[in-house]
Amino acid sequence: MRDSELVLAFDPVPVGRRHDGWTPERQRLFIHALALCGSVTLASLAAGMSRETAYRLRRRRGGESFAAA
Image (tube, rainbow, N blue to C red; front, side):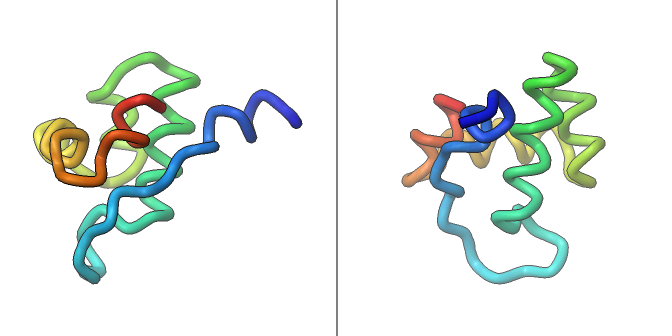
């Protein structure tokens, strides 16, 4: 298993279906960018989302795997 696969080994937070929300793909992009840059602000921008919603997503029910990643 490659390092990038280890970083992405998390369960996306279950969220409602919104085209502009935290889709599983956006969550993976965020985690990958965060691993590369170490900045929640920059990783959020890379995912096209706000820093505040990233922190909110981490605190949601089902967000434990996302928070750990």
